[in-house]
Length: 163
Ligand SMILES: [Cu+2]
Figure (cartoon, rainbow, N blue to C red):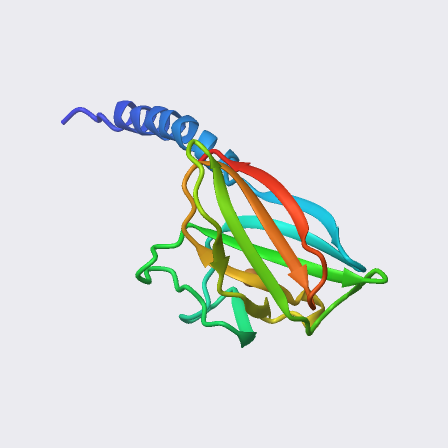
């Protein structure tokens, strides 16, 4: 019987690269918003990241206080992790009362939504990684977010998501 291995292998390699080039733009778009603004005396860095896990064998996030997380596969089907890192005098603030609200500006304007704010840190890291926010579902569009810390004047952010 004739050996036909070389052709299927080269086909598989070609397919691998063809699929890879299809998947690559998606991976490159694992889009991250990171913006910093002042809320009174506090420096606030807003990040909008891919959704994060709070439970399961290797949760990325450890909840310390505040609201309950919107779990992956929960009723909201969250697709993003919107959080703020708070600093004062260039030091992370590990305990603060943080209020986050947001609205879509386009493609259509929505009312303000309050994000239930979880205080969390990165699992396995120190409390210096403390941040505040939650998983949530956001569609593509442009948004405004307001973040107040310990009753400060809010920091105001604008950001866009392509997916
Ligand atoms: Cu987090």
